[in-house]
Image 1 (tube, rainbow, N blue to C red):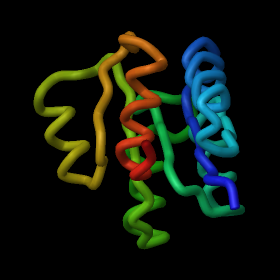
Image 2: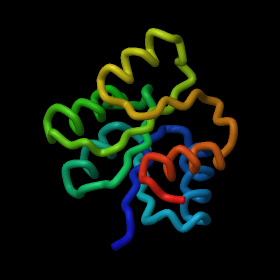
Image 3: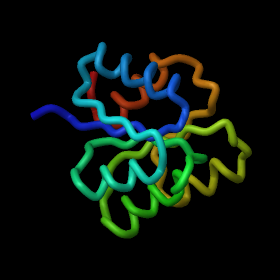
Image 4: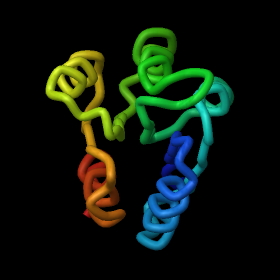
Length: 124
């Protein structure tokens, strides 16, 4: 059974680059959400093995996505949070709320994101 990954970001370039890299590396099925509302809908409809989410998105932010997964659904799904808002207190708050990895934007490379995904999913 293929792993399922959800990428939530309102930046089309981030969605495209990360999705392409994960598919190229054959990590699993990749689903995308362009805003928080779409992300919440997908998370309520199916289970994912890993979620990558931006903090700042229209309708619902990454914090609300995180709360849905951790508090409402009580899941331990690995979560990578992306943001250009990378103040130390933002990173600390995200980790305290259950984020497994925090990646600052602009992204260094899609390879870096893929390496973090592989680490969290215990893949080589």
